[in-house]
Picture 1 (cartoon, rainbow, N blue to C red):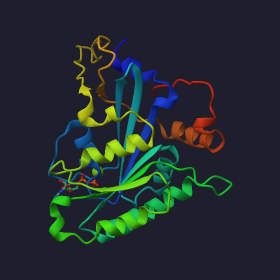
Picture 2 (cartoon, rainbow, N blue to C red):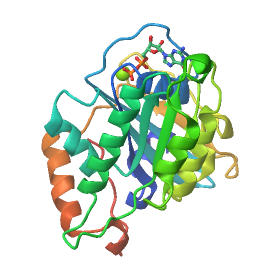
Picture 3 (cartoon, helix red, strand yellow):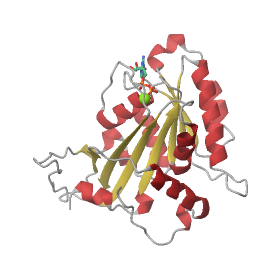
Picture 4 (spheres, protein in one colour):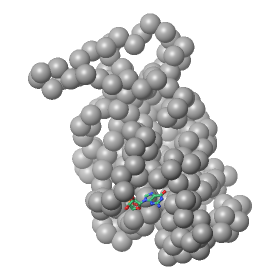
Length: 259
Ligand code: GDP
Ligand code: MG
């Protein structure tokens, strides 16, 4: 069975959606591109919403990570609320040279927590990492790290913060290791900790099968090209189901369907 096929049938507890939030122009897309391809582009192309899927085989088990790259805070508030409801783990990015972007980061955190509050007003803890990007422009900083640390203290126990530079690839790996640790996912999902498999495509645009079954101990991952974002209708259904069924309540291992 190919790695992509394995990813498609990963058990639900091994599938997560990572949502990357924050103001426009703070470097959300750059951080995702570093995570997926370890490259950096110096230009800014405004994102409306992008979807990526990476599947892994780690210690013999299949995992799937869906990544939602979002627009800034203002456009499409309904879609943004839906991304809070359907996301499992979150990165909220601000630009450490822009106080405005940090203020928006705090607003997003509040909105996210509000959306994760159950009917009983109890917060279901969700792993969140606050990321101050553009550390290479530290001399123009307007947000101190101690202020951000202060924000993390005493709120959700599953929150942490880092300062990074997507441009120079500094500290990026720390974000993902911490996030996966908080989400109880294998740290091998982090970029430098697994072998990257590139599916070669056959003439009819179907990925050629490749056998990765030889070494059970070796972690590997593949980026699924042209992964299609689940429809808004599917997301609405997921959000509705989550209102009544918690992941941990589910005893049976449901299979994730690939949309
Ligand atoms: P998004 O709108 O939040 O997705 O931001 P982008 O990832 O498109 O980045 C916005 C702009 O910031 C682009 O011109 C990037 O090249 C630049 N940028 C992203 N990360 C960094 C960084 O770490 N340092 C510097 N100096 N510029 C960055
Ligand atoms: Mg973007």
